[in-house]
Amino acid sequence: YKNKNLENQFSVRINNVNDLSQYTRAVHAIEQNPAIDNVTVNNMEDSSIDITVTTATDLDNLSRTLTQNEHLIATTNSKKNVDLTLRWRADPSQTNSNYKQQA
Image (cartoon, rainbow, N blue to C red):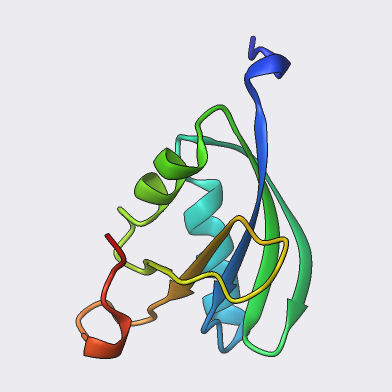
């Protein structure tokens, strides 16, 4: 029922994923987002996950939608060929002035 012409694919990197439990929760948080049609995990290295998301929305809306999850914070892109970089916050009650959400 979805029009393939309206689908966009974006490369997303999630940093600060420190163990298998956080990995599972981070991928699940993105998969469960209603704006996301598909998630493909491309790579895991150190504390980062590189994924491709398929969505009908644009990059700005994707960023806004994903960061509504209290565990995901938009951050500055740190790698070429990455459309969106997010930081996983395992405990949302902890705040850190170094990681203020980008406007």
